Image 1 (cartoon, helix red, strand yellow):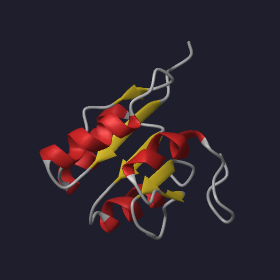
Image 2 (cartoon, helix red, strand yellow):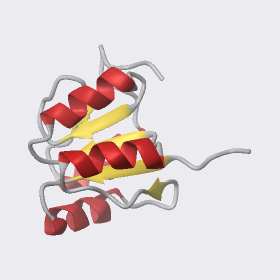
Image 3 (cartoon, one colour):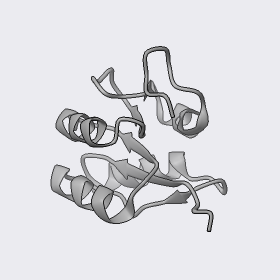
Length: 109
């Protein structure tokens, strides 16, 4: 059975999360509920098993933990963070970065 690609968005508050999810939504994948704290993010990663993590905000520890546990997971962030696959400089870039090839030196999927 083939499983749809799942994307988990993480942002610092409900408004930022809603904006990030609007930027990430696509008919090509499923969005997980999303998280606004480190604990929520880690919990949803364990339950939802996303293929892609999109993180906007100061969640360096989440990125590090996820990269260590799932080194092949695609991680899109809004800042250059160790473990991220791509850096989105705006919300408008998010959707395109979810599916493009990783930057040099990034994980190989």
